[in-house]
Image (cartoon, rainbow, N blue to C red; front, side, top):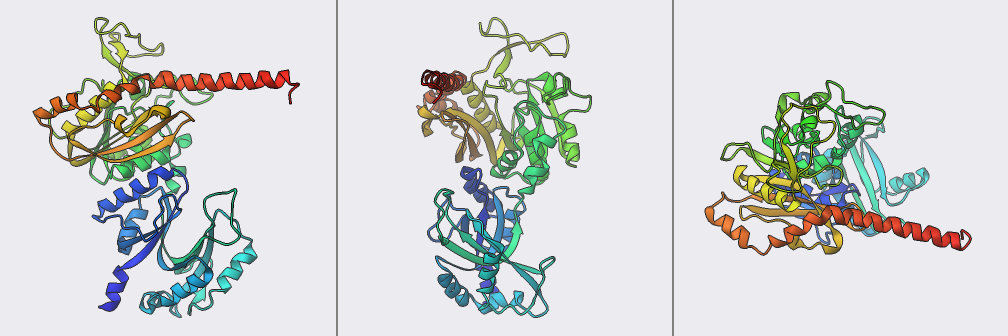
Length: 473
């Protein structure tokens, strides 16, 4: 009984990729919640560190996380750790023998890897570090090609590439459990995608969004601004049924001008369904429809397990909705390459504040309880405050992560969870909520975005003129 207890009360080490750092914690938390497990970090936890120690998990929990995460590289059963190799040795010698012995038998094969974060070691130095661990009673044979067990010595040299210490700041040793799904970023790269557009979502971010949303097999996922369906591709990878809508007729039908270099028009088989077919998940494709997000076409009631989307910001794709000349003086004509039916509804400006309000209201009415809404919120950084994040009485804010776009703009990945069904009083409460007013600040995002570009351009010209006046020094 004692051995069984020790095997389920282990500490695990997660080695994280050092990109999209702000998205890592919400992703791991979300994946743990799918298993009903809390995020329980070890002492001295540092969110920006590439190494996290987690308590209260089983090996099955760890394998479940690593089968989905794109933010983590590898996971290990942690046998020892310390600030120096001497501390590591003492820690390893205290580790329960019954936990080690199943992996050190004579009939087993193994290898030991050395990984250093923020520092490159010569091969000879790696061998010396492995030889120095002779105090561990490995009785099996070394097999570098196909070992039964893999162990790893991991050294952390900090995160500053301009200030790399001579000795590691911290050292870990453990048994390899599993690798994360970083390969998905390459295999699902937009560069290899059959059907793409000007704003197709990066593959890595698409999978991060799906993980934040806790998308799982047999869920029904909806994207109201589906575009070329990058988010549907990521969600279908995890076994969810996917559908979406978009106001752009040409994109939904895969016709019109192409977005690829040296290609003028899209081919007859370029569409969202073809993208899912490319990755073997066509059977999970429900459909995509031409629809105006401001005028939902869905019947009343709960419909979706997840709503995941990237609304247009008005930069590379316009924010528009259907209407009439009477509705607004800002109505615009359809694009020149529109090749749909002869009847073309007039297109009007669709303000960002209205997009978010409509999106949250739609989610409150059509998500299941516990279902999640995940979307991008563009912000002007000098004016941003947390009060600018749209709220809804039926949705709880789960996480708010930033991806920097420029020195003055960024976008924040917002994850919300439905906690209750809408009531009549919620509408009045929303209108009287002081949080509603700051939403209007997003309406000027386009102007502020281009204003920042203009300022940088002018500054660059001024510097060029100054250098010319000084003889090019």
